[in-house]
Image (cartoon, rainbow, N blue to C red):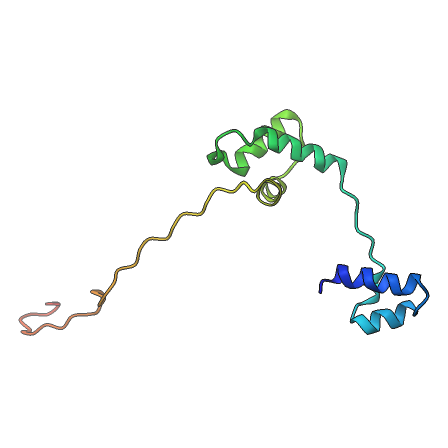
Length: 125
């Protein structure tokens, strides 16, 4: 059960007068600061930024967050690379897929040191 669910249930108990805040938090294993936490309302600036990012999403996905950040800055937005990257990945679901790793060689490795069968001169092998 998530802390948010625990907070809601504990709030119902406290609001109905069934128990006090301390007892409800102790019963549900919830920290009192978590019980008193109020979620932040969405920021209007971030909402407008998301719209601007969505407007640029039809552009090639290879553009990447860094170049899209530059385009946003050209439009007058004060946004950093990390913010643009996070919003593209989490909210729009846009992320350039990572490259697949190279296939490793199968079988016995050829990188083992070899020994000379017939030692003829120094530094032969």
